[in-house]
Length: 194
Image (cartoon, rainbow, N blue to C red):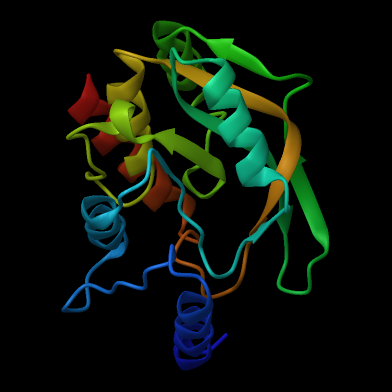
């Protein structure tokens, strides 16, 4: 959707629902800077990021919040996802068989060994208290790994077994980068963490 349509929709929603605030950084910023700006202005006990090209099931936030309330030792919870194309056709998916909690060190070890995280930024609910002063940073690809790892040093990670959102892969998506750039970003961020 064009930005003006999204802005109009958000303003309408905020006018009808006083708990919704529409905020924008004063200047154009990159992805992580935008996320961090939003974190600084967030007021709730839980945080989640919604990208305008992704789709979330209606139950996503409710299930994530329930999980975090039942498991107070969990700092963040991620849901499985479908990878879809621009027309909404399913290209693949990633999910787990059941809901579960992972000890922080187990989450970090599993993510490092597999080279991929069971939690993706657009499909996660974060306990504000667990995030504390931690913010996104590093090379653009896999920068969320650094945030997850830092939280997992003190908190458990949660996994929702059910697929709860769709990651739309479009031709102009910032996440579509050559494989060598992905490898470079992964190496840069993992070296930074380790």
